[in-house]
Length: 225
Ligand code: ADP
Ligand code: MG
Image (tube, rainbow, N blue to C red; front, top):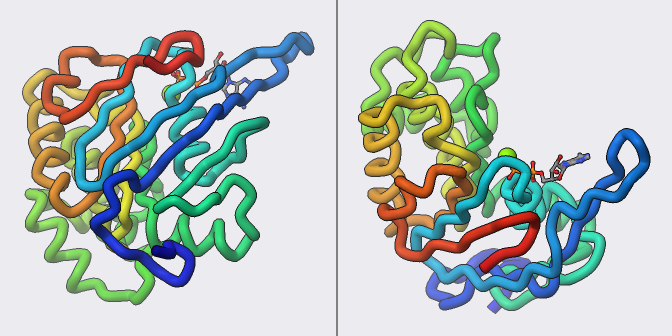
């Protein structure tokens, strides 16, 4: 049933890409194939990981799955409905309400405090909800600016900001790239604890952390296996 007109949980396959390709033009004019005919299904309430080296197409795949960019060819389905070419309003609704994106570090706005970063995207300006969520995730210094707290705290706040509006999906780009081993472990544990509430797709070049996920896909030169 329709994601259009709001969501039902419980679908097995919540996001599906069929034959998705995407190319860019390099500055010299030559064609760069970022994604090459990718077909993949992501099941609801699972923790998926897409692992691949730098330049393999991870962030491009995240942008297409998050409706931030359209593929050159192929299709994107949410809850069995075709969202390859959504109307501007449909795109906006999904991005606002259903898709949470954790950008690569440093993803927080530097001129807002941690708390203000969370309140900014909220559907309703409920500061108390933001405070509660930050406390739950162990972020204490919420009145500080991002560069005044640890990278781990910034990443926790960035995840909190992505889930504050209760999305269906969480798309996470390189969550451990700037962290120590123990910091990375803490962030992976946090994400694992969220998988009952959200369908998570984490994109990483760190094969080590893939052991925390339910399902691993490997991306190389724009080809997913
Ligand atoms: P990853 O996140 O795995 O490092 P990306 O998706 O960022 O990979 O990039 C995949 C390929 O597409 C790389 O060769 C990159 O240089 C290229 N690319 C990505 N975005 C653009 C863009 N906006 N313009 C030109 N090339 C791009
Ligand atoms: Mg990337």
